[in-house]
Length: 595
Image 1 (tube, helix red, strand yellow):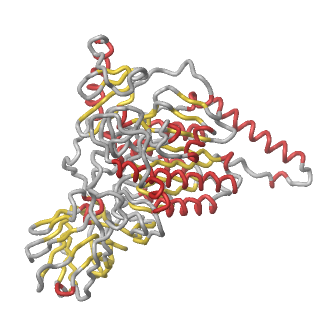
Image 2 (tube, helix red, strand yellow):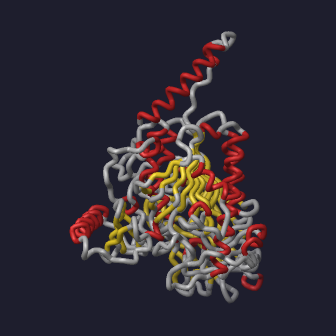
């Protein structure tokens, strides 16, 4: 903390000195020293090796690399193996199993409401706050980003999305349409935000959605890779999908372009020296591709699945080009940033993370050894400064064997035993749930402080003939609705009595119009006949560079179902058909409740 205070005192001295020299200026006109801005950028499914600064000659990322050259880079920084756990950890400073996060969809991605976020702390400290991108930590208020400390939100709250070109998105809960390629669009919103708030302290959280599949990227970037021979290939026995790799790298080059737009805008606004910029990723690469010879990818608890680049630039305040060897983790971001900006990390729950500021400004001889835990899908590994104990209790010397090729547990039994003991104690303490495990938390509806509540197909349960458009729920819709006995239910809790206007987003072929759709909750019911056909084709495949695993999408039509009077309490929200004159009823994407 000494280095942080020294920096502030020096800056304050310069401000006061300047004011004294300008005798004609009254003292009250001296501008109050502003806390540093924060821009936190996190890529989605980009591996540690997907940067030219990591030694990857298959692509060029000069703007991201410049953050390391102009700031501090952590050589051994760890996140969790998948998206929502990492995002929850960086926002709370706590290990994700403590937070109620145990899945990446259908509610299991939500952070418990008892948690305090970095955005809440900064907002309470006078910061303007915004998040633009893939949230992935809860959709319905009070899990929504607007309820977790962010004044402004634009993007999508689910885990993955089905279209990156002018897709359906939301702005502070209200459905809207994107403008152009999504990462470019999110960047545009971010540039508008920092321009609007340039005279006050701001926190901009940019959780980008790429290079997560579907593998969509503008021609400008794809054309560089489509016929390119890649010099570096995946080292393991698994098969590398070269087209997938090329698409991922093209998407990373697009991210690099947008990072460059941010650094340029900060320079234009004369904000660079008072803005902390962080760049990181949320897990390992989403495919088998070059990753520095490390074992594993996204979803794995091995080094390759959890090691992330971590660059932090604060021009002229942090030393340029400094590299930190000490292990660190996403849980360290909250205590570190709050210390840097001089705010107390007042949280409702105790932090797991450590304040990294002693490592930022100097070599710290008093830094204490620590362990970092990685967990997913019932598998757990433990990383110390020198060793990693994997899920099968094999021990590896990570200073000399980043690829985890040689188990040395027999040679170092005391080390192995100590890490096994630590792993078991951690598991007993945080008590992680398995993905797809039943979640007893209902989906919230009608939060008193928010106008909109989105109830998507993702969170519903189909009954009868009704099916999801894809096994991965996040961007799915319901289809194959053929019988009056079929229905869709959502386990919801209405948080307060209220009147809600309900909008249904649907599609229906002309020959199947005439169905009467009823929505009910408790004693409240509304019903409407589908009279207008809307039957657009599935889309997405025209922009895919490689075949996708997620659902294709289509344009859903909004239709007012009516006004519903809801009483506070928990129950099933049920959508069913009272009459189906055609072969089938409608396809359903979501319900929107507006007070």
